[in-house]
Amino acid sequence: EFQGIKEGTGKSQYSGEVEIGTSGSDGKFSMLDEGRGGNKTTNLKNSESGDGELFTDGDDKWGDGSVNDPATAGVDAHYGAGQTWDYYKKVHGREGIAGDGKGAVSRVHYGDSYVNAFWDDSCFCMTYGDGEGNKHPLTSLDVAAHEMSHGVTSTTANLEYAGESGGLNEATSDIFAAAVEFNADSPEDVPDYLVGEKIDINGDGTPLRYMDEPSKDGQSLDFWDANAGDVDVHYSSGIANHFFFLLSVGSGEREVNGVKYNSPTKDGSKLEGIGIEKAEQIWFKALTEQMTSTTDYADARRATLAAAADLYGKDSAEVKAVGAAWTGVNVTG
Ligand code: ASN
Ligand code: ZN
Image (cartoon, rainbow, N blue to C red):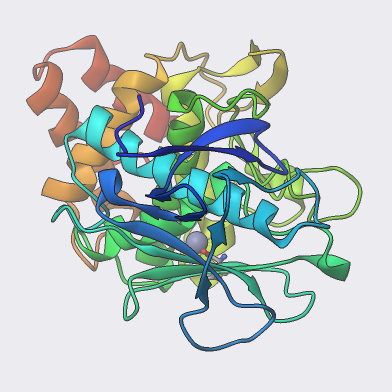
């Protein structure tokens, strides 16, 4: 639901026509969302430093839905920040990324053909490149939610960004990116268990990452093994992303919102999911109450089992499902 004091309309590149929280009055509006802690979105105009220039507009109708209008990337980023804010508030009772009611800054048009986006604790801001040829800004809803969720992780468990804890840090951002999509009101971004499916980062229409079978990207791990801590954190995250898919949806061939998945288990077990609504509650409680900077995969199994026991009872079907999903990704406890 909309909580800002002003509602502008934006034509985004990836989410269709959306409402965004703005401020101001006739003749001069700005991308400052007072209703969401003062989230604001600025234009770096290809610079790689500075705060950027706050987006302003005369009639509160932003962007044209294409890269030709610099405000379009602003719409996507501002919308993503707003939807992520609403998600944490509505689903987890958390006010803002740090839980203190304060908004964050989104900076778009970073550098030239920069193919990444990143969160930075020190500026409490996220920054988006414009992608290959400056044609595909990395501003889709899931990318925004992923980056902002790095801020949630660093103000809670603070999972160290290396080794297995780094994989769990990355997975936390992908998990909440999916959860934000499922809770958002985007007319065009179909909620799915894919990461970066809108930004065409590979140039062939394929997503950046797959949660049902992470190895489909060519590098991510589907299952835990003793070397999991040695690979890039964006690949060891596959183990927990896969756990989350199995817990939410189940194993084998599945279809959600018209998107087809096929999720294997290491032990050949056939799993039924408990739904993303419960799975995201379990992950959030584990992240905020159980995990620490050094949590590894074995600890994550214990943390989520404890969270599920707190939420649903120690003999609950949910606790059994958590254990079975971890076993399915070879975190056997
Ligand atoms: N977009 C990347 C991420 O959020 C940036 C990085 O590698 N830290 O994971
Ligand atoms: Zn990340």
